[in-house]
Amino acid sequence: MKFLKYLSLPLMLFTIQCSFTGSSEMSARDSLSAQSAQTEYVTIIDSVHPAYRDFLIGIDTLDPLSMSREETNAYLMKKSTELNALKASITANASDKRKAYFEGNDAITRFEDIKTKFYLFGLSNLPSEKKSTLEMGQLGFFSRSGAFNISKQLKDLFYTFPEDIQQSVQGKDTWALLTRLEPRIGENMRLFEQQLLIDTAGGSTSLKSIMDQPVPYKIIFFGASWCTACRIREHRLKTWHHLLDPDKVSIINISVDKTEKAWLKSVAEDELPWPSYLLPEYSKAAIYQHFKLDEGIPRVLLLDTDNNILFEHSDIRMIVSKLPFIRYEIRI
Image (cartoon, rainbow, N blue to C red; front, side, top):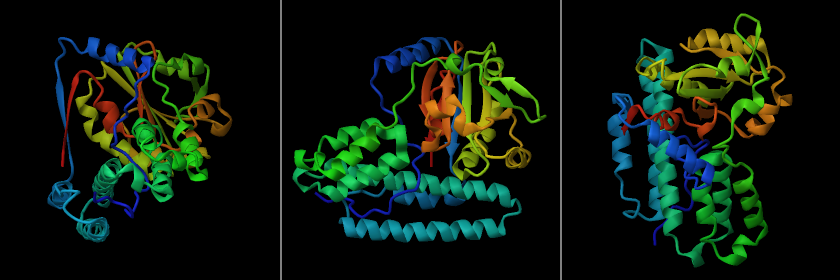
C-alpha cells in the first residue's frame, strides 16, 4: 500500500474535526440537537479567496493512491513553494495589504489541511507490520500540533501499531502526548466566574458578569496578539459576524498577552466587533492552567445558556458549524 511517509508536516492543524465519545459530549450533542428543532437557519459559506481556489481544488482532488510516497511528497513540496509564491505576488499587488495577508494565510491553512488529510489517509491504510517508530514519531508530532482536535483519531491510529512499537520508548512518549489534553466538554465555566479580566478602558470585570448574558450560546475565544493563527481565525469570524444574531450568540475574546500595551495595540489594529479582555498575570490564573493554554492557542469554547461547555476546538469554523441555527458549508 502506498503511503505518505516523509510528508512535510504542518505547523498547526485547524480543520480536523473533534471526535469524542464520552457521555458528557453525548449530552452536549443532545442539547444542540434538541435546540435546533424548528429553527430558522442562516447559511454561512466558508470559501477561500477566488485567487487561490483553482490552486487548492487541483490538490484536494488528487488521488492519494495515484503516486508513490516519494512522488506525493515531492509534489506537495513543489505545490507548497508555488502557493507561497502566489501569496507573495497577490499581496504585493493588493491595495489592501492587511486583507491580502489574511486571505493568503487562509489559503495556506487550507493547504495544510489537505496535507494532513493525505498523511492520515496514508497512515490508516499502511499495514500494521509496516508501521515503524518513524511513523509513531510522526503520530506524536500530530498530537503536539493538533492537540485535542484530533486526539480520538490519533489514539485509534496508535492502537493499529504493532505491540512492540506501542511499548517502545517512542510509543510511550507518543501516548503521553496523546493523553496530555482531554476535552472539557460538559464542564461548567462557573468554576472560573470570579476570574477578573481587564477591559479596554483599563477597568476590571469578572468573567461571571460577561458570561451571564441572556443568550442561548456564548463563544469564548482565547488568543494573543503574538499568535498569528489566532488573529487569522478572528479575522475569519469577523467576516461572518453580521450573520450571527446577537440575541442568539455572544462572543468575547480573552487575551493571554504578557503586556497590556501589546494587547491594546492588537485590539486597535484588528477592530473586532465584539468585546476583548486581558487575562492579567495569565500564567498564574486557574483558568489558564485548567485549560492548559500553554499547550497552544487559539482555543475556542462554545457554551450554552447555563455556561456548560458544548464544544471545544482550535478552529473557529468548527465552533460556528455547531451553532444549531447556522447552516455551515465549506467550499474551496
